[in-house]
Image (cartoon, rainbow, N blue to C red; front, top):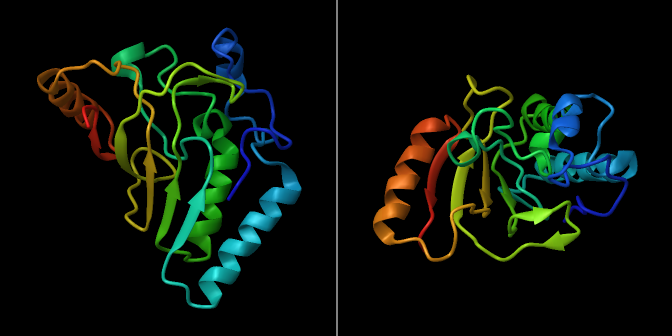
Length: 183
């Protein structure tokens, strides 16, 4: 279990500073967990793989996968910079550690709501999502999966509208394998 909200985290998106965080989201010095927790995490992943564990289940408070949010929010800031998307170099280092060391079958679990910098919850509107993780949008890798749950569409969405939006979101995002906005 990682602490990605309160331990040695670089500045995040509080939704009033999105443009500023967007400008630095790929800076190599940005971190979600700091060097001590990062080293602990990478060592645990490697040791688990070496001892022959079939799966690694990683819990953290925020969405690990890259999610294209251009449909609800437009193209200007199509990523959520308060999650791993806002720490792109760190995210890619983590994926590199998994890929380079052939650490397969990783499941990232989190239950989140749309929130402000892990500080103030704005409601609990959840969806179910399965995404394929990749270093870049053109690379696909079925060895790493993530399950997450942010929903910008509201809890009173109809089944018809939810299914239509699910189809649009899945078509717009190469990494999005499946999601359900209704249930």
